[in-house]
Length: 173
Image 1 (cartoon, one colour):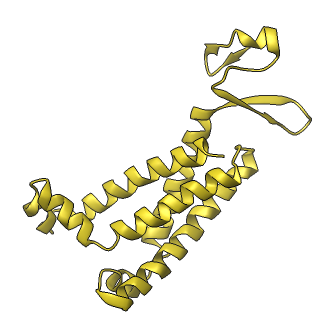
Image 2 (cartoon, one colour):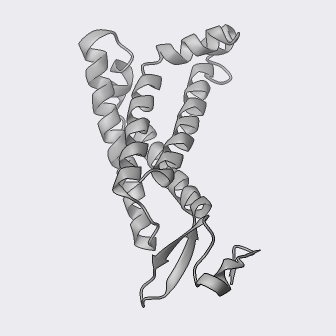
């Protein structure tokens, strides 16, 4: 048995794979091994696709403008954004079921929960500005041309958070 180019010696003895693989039934009853790394790659790509749609298409101008405001108005906008954003992410994760990517309720809850909290925190904007100032990049935080420094840092933090969220989706449950 060869899985992604790596020989699995346990295949001959046990009929199943190494600890790094999960088994899933394919249509027709045949068992196909799916590695945790393969599941992670699919989950991360799906979450990133959902992120792109949720952050750049589903988010309205009014929500984008209001989410950094102080008080109730800012928190309400963050709540609306986090909800619509995660509907896009859930749709992307759900699409993975079409190709039988093994997902668990517990893993999805952990990953989506982390994503919701981290996304809402990052999008308040002051944490990004504070991080850039404390790491010695206040000019980058204030830069708007040729690129927006705060937006680039925001995107970087979101991708890092999605990485952790995808690890939770695959590793928990």
